[in-house]
Length: 329
Ligand code: TRP
Image (cartoon, rainbow, N blue to C red):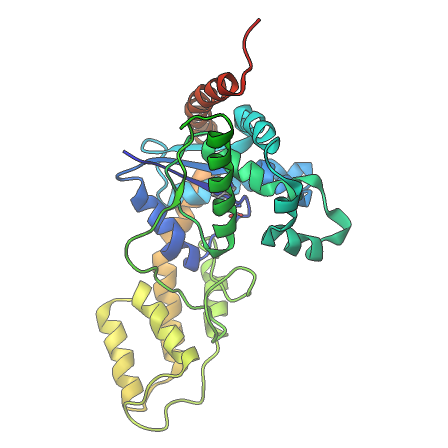
């Protein structure tokens, strides 16, 4: 069985795009892999969150992912800062990471541009910590989005470098995890492209029905088709694509027929779409809130995750220390 690992940013509010994208695949991934999922709260310190928000954010994200199907019985789910071994591996890997290559990292250069007042060393060594996250469990595979590909490439480089320097074949060289089938593209409500948090066109899983109705009613459309059976321009196609995800077949063909006959009323379509989204997200929202409000359950899950993560991490650290040449006196 292969070990697959993924780090999750502690920024809450998963939206439908996340749900039908990465999250759904994570849930499936658990079936036939030894999975580790952790909340990257050490990494989040690079942007200086307030102490009172730090744990709050972690609890929110955990509740959301568990409500969506990450399963603490099948996978190891833990908090990065619960596992000090990762900090030690980060220190050790840092000795063989070169300032030049770290400065050339795209995400680092971006951060320098975005937060020039806070170019801390943690930002510079972000990729080293990420490599430590992955190598601490000697993962074979890591699911990565476009923005994280370079980090995984650097992890591979650090792992190879370690093996070469110490003349061992210790670390696996981790590869990207491919989700097999094509990723579902979930469009946003603004008539352009993909649903995304920063685009402001997203429906969150935690949104109340009235918020969902309001967002959907405001979605961009057009003046309506001029000819029968015409192709749908993007904003309209987007609404139909969302329907494909949450509505039943009869509803979809009803509105398709209306569109093709030039009789479509976008107000009706939006009303129906909003209700179907609500039916879909309501049980998820309720699960998120149940978990979030059940501290006892969350604490228990985190305690189990922490123990499993530490067991795997301590094994790696003691072997790495030996390879490097640390010996007990
Ligand atoms: N950097 C990742 C992100 O921003 C989160 C992350 C931290 C991660 N450590 C990881 C992802 C290790 C995969 C593997 O999304």
